[in-house]
Image (cartoon, rainbow, N blue to C red):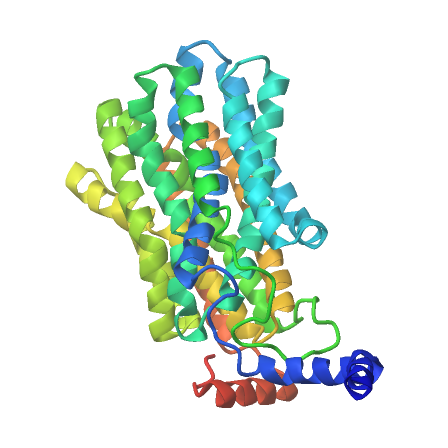
Length: 445
């Protein structure tokens, strides 16, 4: 008995703790790739729910509500535009503060409570107390969306197998596409019940998805592919290719803005086809948004994310240029589906490219993705004012906006091609080849 007690004391001492720690660390190399806690599909579903609630509905459901806010005399047209910009301002603030929020609360709690905040914001908008009241809650919904956009991938993807990261990322951000589709289909149905009940109905839907995903997030633990500890793990890698990717993403964000903001108005007023035709085209745009994230994520898995990003940007530049010259509704309908796939679909591709450039460093990947999200948010905010100014100065010429957007995508292509030839330090290239050798894949440029 005395011997057993002595052995127990020895095992509980510093040496025993060190032995247990060493065993745990050595055993982590053989851990299952199943995320700790919920199954992989539940983690992906939780991520998709977060993007649906925090960005899909919190941002895009506002667009079809704009005419009703004016017609119901809740706010003046100028105030409605001002309130729409509040969400983008909040989104930028959320993207800037996302890393600090994640460190303070942890990803699981941060994402849960940001979904709660977005839900409360929609519910608060059911009562038109005043412009400042509405502005605050639109700002809050944007803040929640910005935090979710930055943190959701890092909360799920490190716990999944690497072979299908693009497909998984596409599934996570499919919530954006579902939100766009819902804004064109669900919101008109809810409006039959009244404007206040529409906001309440959206809040109830968000509350449902928040509750269903509450326990779906992976618990903190060893990732599926553990990274080697390095100094400056939380700092993004400073490379020419990463900087060019940020510029490319900012130009892409500028290019996708005109169709996202003016497509329905182009058909209904610009072509004189009426609001019914404009709503139909927006629904088709939403259908494209439904398939874009998963389709483009799968394309990134097959081709590599750098090649996939160039290909889809080329297609989108051509589609936007064609829209600037289109007159027939069937042609515009097809282009709407293609163009609609881009805003949510480009997100997992850019995310996958970040992960290629910052290999096996989850914290640095999260930091780099946060920087990319900020670049996109800044571009969206700038573009919103730029296109509004051009729209007013050009006599409300939608085609001019589409051509500017196509030009921005053309510049993004040029930057993307330049990034392929950007010089990579020899040390970084050697590390990339070592990582590729471990994973059994080729190094993607």
